[in-house]
Length: 302
Image (tube, rainbow, N blue to C red):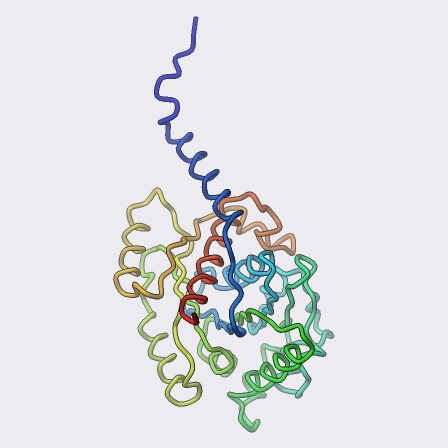
């Protein structure tokens, strides 16, 4: 008795496997053009639970894997970005708190991630939780991160080892920490989850960014929007993706980050999904997003 294989190639599973194989080959051959000068992103969304920290560390790891030199600045008191990169952030460790409040130099605070040779992190410790209050009386309190980062980037450039990308992960609220992040950055990356109320609060965020641009940082612009937590089985996810693309056609990446158990698991092992499960769709999706950002950046500065 012979097994009927008619239509096997057309099965949904086979189509999915074929498509994954095609994407893996494409990303293996993809170019990640290095930027002409360092690109500094603040990853921001006042809405919690949109994959902000996850996006920060996985994009950083994706760029580092491609050969770029990358710095992650963890500006969230929870320190989740530090955890995901396997960075020591116990209370006694020098951290971004010491840069903001105690005038420590960034080169004394930066730690190297074990994941990739060119991936570095400025960790956050529990002390950061009180930094908002301690910053209030300080001179030029909104500029403290920017000045420290600029000095550090110049030092690295002069030493012949310039950075290509900086990602700043900030808390989901607009206080002095987030303002410092916006002032230090040149570009804003907004992760938006493909779920109900996805665009809620976005107009307020854009209004705040506009205020900072006018009064504190004229070079700031929303350059990138990344759709996260996409569930292809739901009509709602597709609808949200369409809505976001309608509103922000130039900023929204074609690449989409799916809902993924592997992405969620990775931080508990002190890793990003890029190194935790390199073959997963989550890892592949972040590599695709990074490649797209690199190409768009090269075109806009070309």
